[in-house]
Every structure is written in structure tokens, then in C-alpha cells.
Image 1 (cartoon, rainbow, N blue to C red):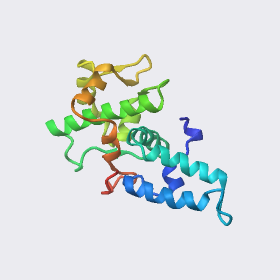
Image 2: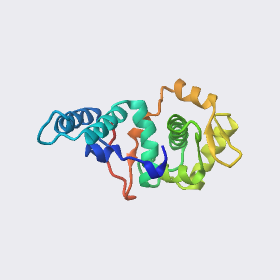
Image 3: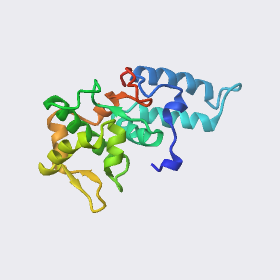
Image 4: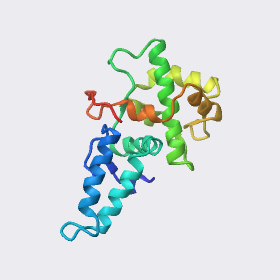
Length: 192
């Protein structure tokens, strides 16, 4: 999905990126009824098709997680993996950073299989964590064979990394559960 042709499906459905699945479904039904071509007053075939596509993506947890990676890149939004500004150290914080990195790379591979890697700047921006606080997690994931560094210096998920996500029971959905912090103040809404 190219950035210049990016469509904000949250905007299409007029919902927050933190909206729960029930909200996505409820709003879709209202908008679909409004824009359905059979509606003589407000029918709009083009808008109806856009609402339907947005619903298909945002109602599927795996597709939504993959879309959220692109949404974050396109909007400059970052996901916070640390609940408190000072909590960037310790075993739990490192585990969460590693899981988040794997989840982001998994989602990137789904949404853009021809270019399934992210660079350090993209990881910093998406995770809201400074480079120096990502170094240990990236080193661990590289050395353990869960991620690899591509020829152009980007990070990509390996088969072992994908298996690790499956073993710990994480799909890319942790990405959608992370708190958004678009303004840098750390909003407290949780995603669906």
C-alpha cells in the first residue's frame, strides 16, 4: 500500500483508531445504509464501495493489525509500548519491546510482502521508543535468529521470529492493542 495512495479507513468510517470491533460493525451498518445505491436520498455507489472496503479491513483482526502499521506510518502516529515514560528498562519492558518489534515486522510482511522490512527510524517512530532503548532488543532478536538485517540495513522477520509469535500466542493484534500517542502525551484509549 503506497503512502501517496493511502486511504484512511478510520476516517472513512468516521471512527477512532481505538474503536472496538462492535463500534466498527455498528458504524459500518449505519453508513452502508446511508450510502447504499438503493437509498434515493443519500445513495452514493462510490462512497458505499469505500465504506465496504474499510469495513472489510477493519473488521478482520489480522488485516486491521497489518493496516495499522501502514496507518501509523502514513499519519506519523506511534504506538507506545511503555506505559510510563521512565519504564524503558527491565525484563518486562525488554520482553514487550521484542514482542512489539516482532509484531510490527509480521504486520509489515503481511501488508507489503515485496518490501517486508522496517528501518530503525520507522521502528523508533512506530514504537515511540528512542533508538538507544531499542538496541538491546534488536541485538537479541538478531542474535537469536528471530529477525535479520537486510542488505539495505532494514530489519525483517525470519521464520523463527514468526514461530516465536505463534509460540507465545501473539498474532499481530498486540499492535492494535498498544496505546496510541500521536500527540506525544500518550492517550489512554485502548484499541479493539
